[in-house]
Image (cartoon, rainbow, N blue to C red; front, side):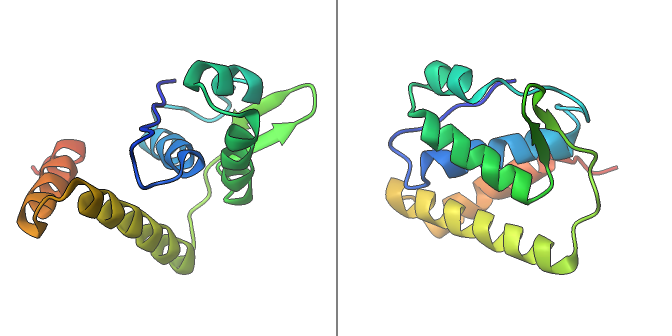
Amino acid sequence: MIVEVDPRSAVPPYEQIRMQIAALTSSGALPVGTRLPTIRQLAGDLGLAPGTVARAYRELEGEGIVISRVRHGTTVAPQRRPTARQVAERLAAAAQAYAQVVQGLGVTRDEAMATLERELNRLSPGP
């Protein structure tokens, strides 16, 4: 599993972790049942406080993306279809995080939209 945290980002580190793991699970890069690193291990790898990683894992568990069990660790949960409200909330949160990053970098709206369009095309190319 490859997760990176940009300390210069306006997006909090726990949210960067949460978003990346959520994206990896939804894309299938982390299949159901995959065991995630322990909180301590991921925190050490990323140079973060364990509480930061714990918060990301708690949020992922709250969203039904992972399951945490004592002595079994944290694993990718079977994915259920999100409700329309959950989709809207996640989309709004992602858009807000992206807008904050764009603003922090000082790029134009056109540059930001072109970058987003390229990424969307890269992830799901047309026919």
